[in-house]
Length: 302
Image (cartoon, rainbow, N blue to C red; front, side):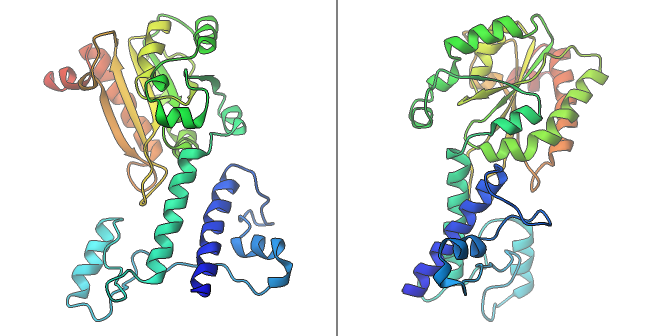
C-alpha cells in the first residue's frame, strides 16, 4: 500500500507540474523540456534522491494477457481513445490503469480550475473582458451569470469595439483553459485569414473570461454584428482536456434558442486539427451570411 501511495503521489504531482508548466509557471530544462515530476520531487525532498519519474505504457499497447483475438483488440484500440483492452487484476483495474485514470482526471480538473494566462492573451493580442461572474466557484455554480457581461465589460465593448460589422469573434474560456491555449494560436489566424480573403468585415477578436455560450448574444446586441462566433473550451474528459467548440449564430435576439446555433465541436490535435478547423469555420460563416440563418433554419436551407 505504501508503494502504491508513493506512485500515486508522483503521478498526481507530475500531471499538476505539466499543467503549471504550460502556463509558464515552472522552469524548463536547457532543451525546452518541462522539469519532470521526479526532478521536482527530488528538489523538494533531498533525502529521497533515488525517486524516478512514473511512466505509463502507450494506450495502444496490449495490456490483456492471452487475448482471444489480439488483432481485433488492437484494431479497436486504434479507433478510439476510450480505455479498452487495459486488462484487470481480479475484479479490479490494474494499478497502472488506475494511476493513469487518476492522472488524467487531475489534468481535466486543472483545465477547469486554471485560468487562461495574461501572457497568452498578450501574445495573441486579445483584449479581455469578463462576464457577470466574479469567481471561479461562482462560474461553476451560476451558469446564468456566465451568459451575460459585467457592467465594466459592457462599457469596454461599447467604447472600444467596432460596430455594425458582419462577423465578431469571441474567445471564451468556458470549461477548459487548456483548450484555449492549445488551439487558438493556430485556429484564430486561419479563421481570420479565411474571412478577410472572402471580403468579410470582421471586428477585432477579444477574450471573455468566465463566459458561457450565451454570452455571445449579449455581445451581438452591443456591436450589432450579423454573425457571432464563439470559440469556447469544452468540458474536459479523461480522453482530452484540450477540446474546443465553435458556436455560430446569425443575429441573436431575446427569442433565440439553442436550435438557432450552428456548432462545430471536437477541435483539437486528436480531433479536427485547429488550423483545419479555422479554414472550415470561415467557409461555414460565409454560408450562414448568405443564408441569413444559423442552426436548424440554416440546415433546412441546404
